[in-house]
Image (tube, rainbow, N blue to C red; front, side, top):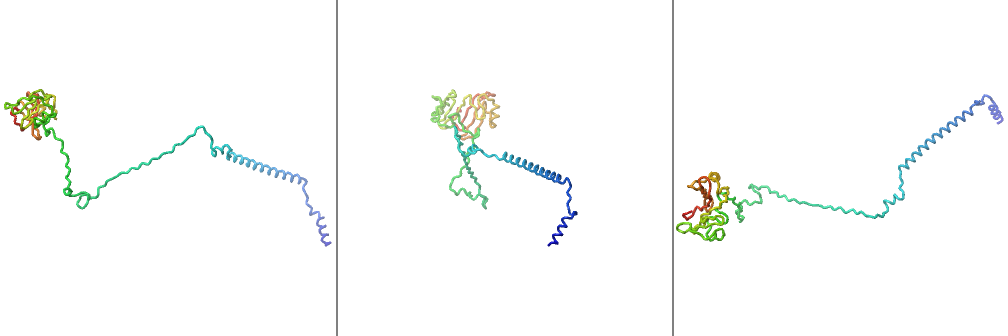
Length: 269
């Protein structure tokens, strides 16, 4: 034990083991510590500025509502006028279209719902109405008077002017004036055939726009079947009973237009 102590004393007293410190080592250490302290302070200050900036931005973006703002949407407020939104009325319209489709034809070439023999149904077939009569096929009628009309029926129309006069030497036929034609022979009536002649008023026109004052050429142009008979132009009509237009003229112009029954027994007609 004593030997160990002696060895340690000799070791610590050896000058070669002494650590020689430079004269300015203390100042170097102090300056280094100062520099490290300044760097820590600068870094800490920079972090503080960044943190404060972040907090400022956060406060700017984060808007905390005030109690008044919260009360706006949550609490009812009194108003002098109230606005009521009327309910929206929605109407729905449904349109139904019915389409009728013909069934396909059967083996006979006709529709299944069609009776191939309509004569067996017991129903009379409906024929189309006849077309309107052409001017040449129209019955001999002027106003309320018509060729073949009996005398009593003609008098009942009120168109004849009485009294009558004999229309022939035998006195069988009677002649009457009419309210539109003052000539006493305007209408001639047979006791057996009825009215056999009607004289048209001077202003009257035929369905082909021919009348008193028209030229003979106009009559022949309007009626292709017109024939000359003395001073008259005769135009037969294809009607029942048969009758004709008689255009009396002076050779160039029509003076009087008469309607004459083809089957008549008055000699002067």
